[in-house]
Length: 104
Image (cartoon, rainbow, N blue to C red; front, side, top):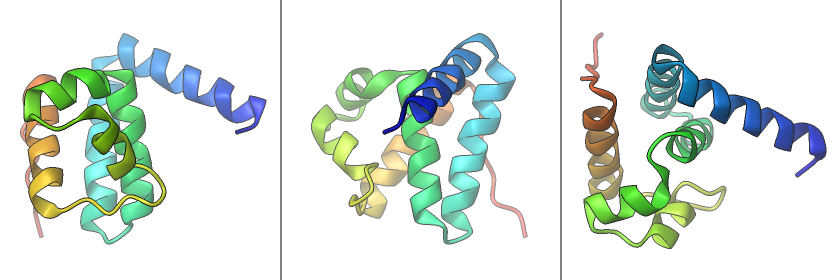
């Protein structure tokens, strides 16, 4: 990871912590990307969202999944099962006070 990428990650995390609307938009964008078939982008956005908001430790505790498994699931080689992914999204929605809906 380059210095520029690290700075961007920190900026993204600061913005998500400071602005709930930004964080909500990040969550929506990650889920939208996955629903559109772009799993890699969706995983990346959700990984950043998780890091900036609840963290992998708290998420793992909440959904009874080891944090390291979650980190791998949202990593570049990760291939989340639907059950795990839906548990994560349900928890993230609840924590953010959002309810995402699929529309046609």
